[in-house]
Length: 422
Image (tube, rainbow, N blue to C red; front, top):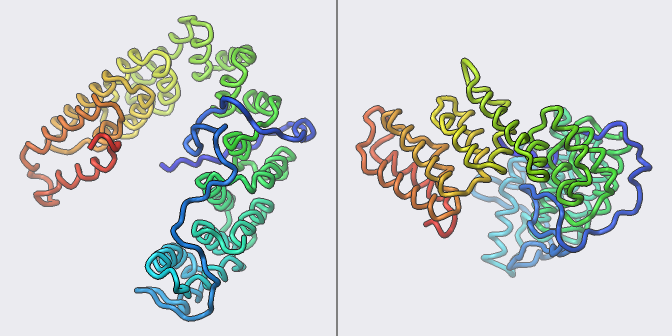
């Protein structure tokens, strides 16, 4: 399932005036929790660090053009063709300029024209394609800014259901994040203020997390209220990293409500074993549930227990890795991601080997992938051992994909290995 990194429920019942003070920039060591969309070193991020390009966009010229299965007339015929064509047009322009830097690609004029399309989704896709090419006369950045300022009014999006609206804004934020581009931070800050004012839908983009990860420090009261109201991991991690034990009373309140994050944090802050024991009980209850593992209640306590007592988490989760429920296996592997020990690699290796034997030759893809993607040398050695063992066995007779099925599968896993693992 693809992570949706910016979607977050609106913080309700909070007075706008409380947080409209001028924001300041974070400095010194970062106390911002890391997520999968951020630079790990916030304080050193430049204001603008656009991707390096070996060409400059020339003055566009009008004209017809044709690619292998696409031409100007058919692409502009309807909305569906425009969206399909925009998946390839920026790449075609890039390749053209790399091969013929002195020759203006006629597709560039079409791309720029589509930035002004009446359909919001077409317009934004064109703007993002142009932005990735380096932009032309600021057209793409201006379109992206306009969308951020008017994020909640997408009358021109076909079949708008709320979710599609946020996907468009997410595309803009992802593009800015990838480029370390802070030129639209003020517009993003204004959108965050509108969230506080209740001008938005109930499920919204997490502008606050984006701004913090970019170095703009938001008020402490905002994060405290958000953590108190929603107990989301980003707000809690930020309070813990930035303010230490100051909010321990809040963490204890959450612990009393069964919050596993609070249990792990209080164990780290106090050393009291009762908090770790609570997580052990939660994981044990989920794993031993009948008639099936209680997967929804397993994920959070397992992840937190793995952070503070990884050896105990490994012991409890070992049988889950052999379960027939692939979702349960996925949750178990996610819970072990923070445990990069040799023991964790051995556990995954043994589970993969056992699953392979139990299935009479079916490759346990989730387990093999988890082993291949681990960065430590023990895991990589175990992956090689598992790969050689499976490749050395006869092709399963039940499989009709041909004699090279196993080799092809491991080629996919090899691509997931860290650079030093090959």
